[in-house]
Every structure is written in C-alpha cells, then in structure tokens.
Image: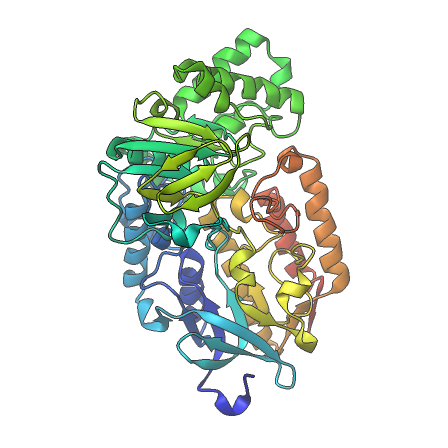
Length: 536
C-alpha cells in the first residue's frame, strides 16, 4: 500500500500520457506556475501517433485543422506537406512542438503509472509508477488518450503460432517486412482499411478476415496545395473560429447542404453525392443535413456508397461481402486510398468470419470453422478498448477505496467528461461524456486542457484544495449524453462508440455529440460558479 513515508516527490499535478493532450497540459501548467510531472510509457512523445506506425497510417482530419492553435507563430511556421498528414509527419510535428517548448525535460519516458490512490486524510493523490516512483500530487490528470489501449482478441492458440504476429496499434518501430509472405489481416476497421492496400502490394498473398463490413469513402489524399495552405494561414484565427461553430469542430469551410436529402430528387442526390465522393474525405457525411438523423435520408447515401463498392470490386461475390449492413456513419466512416480496388488483385482473398467464425490459431496459421489458412504473418487490426480502456488499465482508487473499474462497471459515468463522482481532483482529458472522438481531437483537447488549467488556477487563487462533481450533476449529464445520442443514428449499430468491439464491455454510448453546444455548457458551468461541482 502506498504510504506517506515512502513519498519521493511532491508536485501540484501529475499528468499521465505525453500525446497531444499531455504535451499541451504540461505547457499550460508550467506557464501557470503549477509544478508538474508527466509520465509516458513510450520512449517519446506522440501518443497514438507514437504507437500506430502501421503502413498507411494517417489522420482523417485535414492537416491544416489537425494541429494546435494556441501559438500563432507555430501555426505560421509549420509547413504541412499533404492534405491528410501521415503518421511520420504528425509524429515529427508533435516532436517539433515538444522541442520548441522544451517539454521533454519534465516528461519521464518509458514509465507507466500503475496506481493512483486518493489519500483521504491529505486529500492528495498518491501515484505509483512502473519505475518505482511514488509521488504525492494535489491533482491527477489523465491524458491517456481515447484510442490508446489496444484490443487484441483472446484467440485460442495464439502462443502456438510459429509465425510473426503484430497489432496495428503497437507496431514495431523498425517496421514489418511482408515481402513474399503469406499474410492474414484480422479486422476491417480504419487501421485495416488504411494498411491493407499497402500490405497487399508487398505480400506474396494476403487474406483478409472480415467480421463486419465497413463503409469507406475515398480520401483523395494529395500533396497540399501551397495556395490552400497560404489561404488558411492568411486567416488562421477566422478559420479556427469558424471550425469551433461546427458540430464536429471541423470542416467549417466545406459547403454542405442544410436541407434534407429526402427533399432532393434521386437525380439531384446522385449528382450531389458524386460531387462529395470526388472531393473525398469524411465530409461526405455533411452532404445533407439529416444523414445522421433520419434513417431514410441515410439510406440514400448508403445506397450510393454501396453502388460504388459494386462498381469498383470486379468479383460480385467479394463485392457483396464488402457491402455493410448497418447505417452509414454509425460506425466511424473511413477514408481510404484504394481499399476496395485492392480486392481486385490476384493475391488478395476475403474471408467472412461472421459466416465461418475464427476458431483458433495453429502453428502454421489460422483455422476458421470451414477451413485452415497457412500464414507467415498475422496482423491484428482489431482496434482499441476505446475511451475507457487506458483509464481502467490503471488501478485508480477514490473515496473509501472505490476503484474506477467498480464505479464504471455498468459503463462510464462522468460530469462533462472531465470528472467522476468519488474521485476529487482527478481530471480526464477528452473523457467519456465529452465530444472527444466525435470532434476534431486537437481542438477538443485544447478546450479541455484550457478549462482544467483555468479551474486549477482559480482554485489556487481562492485557496481551495478540492473539486468534485456532484451526484445529481453527473446523473443529469449521463442522461443528457444519452438523450442527445438517441436523437441520432449513431447508437443504431454495434460500434466501438458503444464499446461493442470489446467482449463483456458494457454497451454505453460514450462520446457527446455536438462540439459547440458542449463548449457553451462548459463556459456556462464556470460562469455559474462551477455549477455541478463542490469546491472546498
């Protein structure tokens, strides 16, 4: 048990994670005169962009939007090279920021936080690390990321497989050589859709094992037009302000249709969808205002994408296997570069493991109910235990020894995605109950960090020691998050937004839908004297 006599260091705040959130949190806390230590399990900064180095990994938000906005000089100085930045470029960017701000001296790398326990007598958090550190901190800030806890299926026989296996979310830093290999990719989510076209070009033969077909639209990625970059930089303040008013905190300069898809004629819709398909990217969902609110409207867009899949994939049987059977967008829409075209290659096969479930790995490959597949390398593209996995991977104990895992046993409960009752002074950055993954993550992170830092400074100025959400505020917020989601089509299928990709995980819709509304609520809470919180 952690004890005060063992404490090696006392700080105002401990921050867990050194991705976009942890780095900006460190910068803002230091600037506010708050003593802080950051712990990061990787050997460098970057968070999800440090770990996800699989072939083809890149952002699905355009580069000029997926970046920090707190420093105008930084915005002007950094030059993006592609419309959608690749993982190496994003990692170079976050390292550039960390070096520019001299952040790394306050980050302890190759160190995981394994336990955080509230000492109720002192009101401080006792934080244990994998390196044997024990710190006492007034505030514990979890910047652990929404997509950072990998979900590797518990497949029988994994230890018996004599080949090489990897997970897209923990890709070897020296890469993987697929040349001439018999490769199996398990999963067809975003990381698979990005990596499969590249793996197929290298592999001797590629077999894709699909449980659920996913919708994807072409990214049409290309070198970033210097004129576009110059235009945005010429009005970056206005560009950011317009984005903050958009539902997802992005895409402000995209001209979507405000009316219903059902008000247009079939011919008009076809022309309109074709235009958006050719422009590329996730903004396809903004082509009409009601695609995520009306099932009939959504069906018009879904049928358009389904036709595109059938037109692209030459084998009709394979094409039908690739046709999703859920609402377009209820699972995160993907943006690809040649994904469906890949299935026209002679060295690529698709296996439906919903019809013939995966049974076990063997020394030589993989066995489904119907067949054995000899493989040299297996790629698990099975995603993440999203939004809660990294938090619940730490032994966090609040009042009366209550663990966060027990508190969230029926699903995560927070107030504003920032705090949870029973865990005073414990903040979560882009936690469940905040826009997080249904917003442009970097502005969402900055909004959370700015709110938390302002709260800490306000408490210091008022000589207050603790802040905690009230039960009624948490209950009302959880209900509100679910009420908002129920007005949309997002909860209509088994997605990782609900935790459906992780066995035995409670099915609860986790993100809050509507970035501007959320920001306004956070500002209202502060204006009303931190309404819904108790500060002592």
